[in-house]
Structures are given as structure tokens and as C-alpha cells.
Image (cartoon, rainbow, N blue to C red; front, side, top):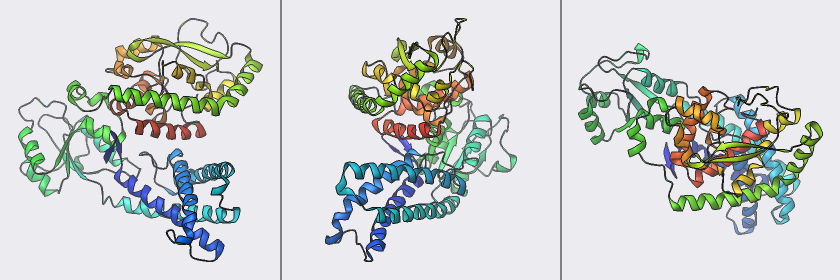
Length: 465
């Protein structure tokens, strides 16, 4: 894993992305060769005119595959998952390419050549993924990790590595027990004591040591050994950094307050704020124009089924704890909370109207919040705003919950594209861990990734209620 604009990206994922760029580019020129019965060379003078079409095709297909989650860290590597993601991605890509051809006729391929290219691309991507999965199973690029500790945090680290089914797999060589610590990891994975920590790291050819010990103030904590390992070129990480890197979360159960204070990230400077505001305005205006017909149809459907009002205004907590009124298309019947007490939304909530179920599933009910963004109360990307009643409850039960209010709330966010709809304190904890990651590492690059991933949420109704 390495970082791009504070966001962790899998090395194997980048390699896969680069290979598939070449596969798609080769499909265009091979398709042209088959169609015209001659070899189309990418950089030959007579075929340079094909390069704009080829680069446009590659960009659109990669965008579609990314939007369908084919490069996410939690992407499942198997035949069925590849097929279920690749086919919709090809359909989406074909639709976007057709629209581009209509708007820019100079880029038009021709129906015959486009059909051949799509067939070659589908075959090439599918075969590439099958070969790549077999290669990643060998874990040639996975660092060899030794975990210091055998308790609950160490067990979480092990479970994360062993149960990881995506193309970024961990390779834990074993666990080093600490005195007076209850062993919660499999005994077969505990390394036998064979000298000092540096000698064990050398024996097992370790690249990284993850410190999963909660009590680091005891005299038995091997701080000098860890320093020697680091000086010998072995990476030393704590559990919080390990979870942040591997699952793009900041785990509150293994978090030390000093890690938040002295660690990197949490960039809320003037430059970042200016870039984010400019991005918010640009994205909101584009989305408002693109979805205006959908919003008109939605408003009409709401009125026909359940009458007025069309919009639902509700108090939410914004940046620095300031309240504001969020706007949504009304998806519940009138007087849904007639008893006056706020309620968590439930699956198949009986208060939801027929139109409401549809617009919630497709996230259309959130579109009026574009006005909140334009007014500066929300951002396009950020933690979802919560109601004051629940904020007060969650702040009492969950440590660090108020940290999410250090930036503006968003229409979509990292927690929304990584976790299902939250309707309990337990769900709120899981979503907070993603929100903390976003607050710490937010950047324009991460905002764009979240917007692309939101397409998958909308298309598949992920997390909608």
C-alpha cells in the first residue's frame, strides 16, 4: 500500500489498473485491424487519428469499471463477482461511449468496429482478472508481517489479513506473545520464542512489525528491540495505522488520543477549504442541471401519492455543531413521528410511502440537498449530517464522535459508499470509523473516488432504505 494525496491505494490494484489500460488500448487497435483487415499500429502516422477515439474509449471503460467497484479494496476475487461487475460495467461504458459519439461525431468508431472492440475488451479484461487473481494468491508483493501481541487487537489484525478476499492480501507470519496477556489468537500461529525481537524478525524474513499491545507502559514492552528493528529497515506500525491502511478506517477501539493529536492528517487549512468549496459549487451546479428533470418527476409523484408538502425539512447538526435545516424529498407519510420522539429508520419502515421506497433506494430523496451545498451549509462530500437528538446520544456512547463535526457534512461520504445504511448505535460506530478516516485524510482525490463509488451505490441501491 502507498498513499496518493493522503489516501491509501493498493500496489497490486495499481498494477491491475495499468495492465487493464493496456488491454483496453490493445483491444481498440486489434479491433480496428480485424475490421479493416490490416495491422493498426498505435503510433504509425496513418493511424494516429485513431488515438483520440482509443484514449476516450479507455477512459470511459475504466471510469465505468471503477464506478461499479472493480478496483475497490473489498472487491471479491472470484468468477461470479467478476462476471456480475464486468457485464454492467460494459453496458454502462457502451451507453456512455454512445452518448459521447452523439455529442462528438468526430470520435465515432462505427458500429462494426465498436462491437468487435467491446467483445475483445470483455474477453481481455475477464482473462486478465482470472490470471491476476491466481498471481495475487501467491502474495508475491505482500509484506511479511509479524504481530506483537496475542490479545483482542492482535486477533482483529489476524482476522483482517486472513479473511481478506480482495487483491490486497495480508501475509502474517505469526504472533509474538507478551507477558501476562490472554492469548486469543490460534495457538498454531503463535511464534516460539527464539531470542530477541530483531533476531526473530530476521529469522522469519519480516518486512513489518505491527504493535497490537494495548498496554505499552509496562516494563516488558520491548521498545529498544522495536527501535533496533526500525533502524534495520523493518517497518514498525501500531494497530491504528494498520487498520487505517488496510481497511481505510480509524478504529475507535484501538485508538490512542495521542495518535490523533500527534499523527498526520486532519488538514483543514485555507487552501484545502478553498479547493473543496470550489469543487462543491462546480459539482452541485452540474448535478442540479443533470437531475432537474428527475426532480420534477419526483415532486409530481410525491404530490400524487401523499399530497403536499413535497420537501421535508429537518434539523441536523453541521460543522462545529451548528444546527441547520436539511432538505429532502419527503419519503415518509405525513406525521411519521406524530409522537414527537425521533426514531431510527428501519428496514421496510412502514412509515415510508411507495414513492419513498423507490427514491430512497436510488438516493433521489437526497437531491434537494444540492441547495444546502450551494448555501454553504453542507459539502458535496463529507460525513452525513445527523439529528441533534441522536448526536447527543451518540456523543455520550461513542468516543471521538464529535470529531466528525470538524468539517461540513456531505450529500455523500466515505461511510456511505463503504458501509450499509446505519440504523443503530452499532452501525453508527462502524460509520464513524469511516468518517474519521475521511476527516483525517480528506482531499480532492478522495472526493473524486467517493463520487465515482457513489454511482455503484445508486445503481445497485446499496445501503438504501
